[in-house]
Image 1 (tube, rainbow, N blue to C red):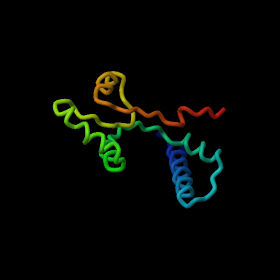
Image 2: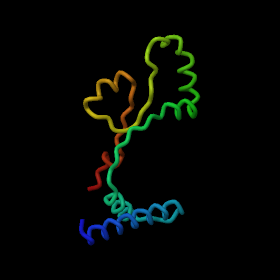
Image 3: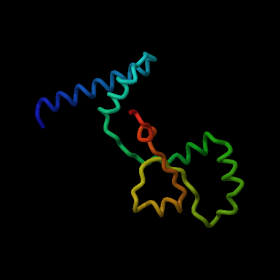
Length: 111
């Protein structure tokens, strides 16, 4: 990796961190600056199990699970996951109740 490439990567990293801190401090940011920062970031797909979060925050989910627990004594309990799922896992994930979310940035048309 060349010196110029490392310098450019460091510059991009500083730009994104600075923009993020500006947003945290409620400064006004132009949409072009935000899009530039998003272009500098690399996408990281990660699977996150949010079952415990939903059970803690959403009383209706907890109530539903408790009221229907006697029906599922021998069945596998459902879990809620957000993130990337490989194609070969797609069938098994449907069986265990996985929720897949796509990034809103992928859905947007910026033209």
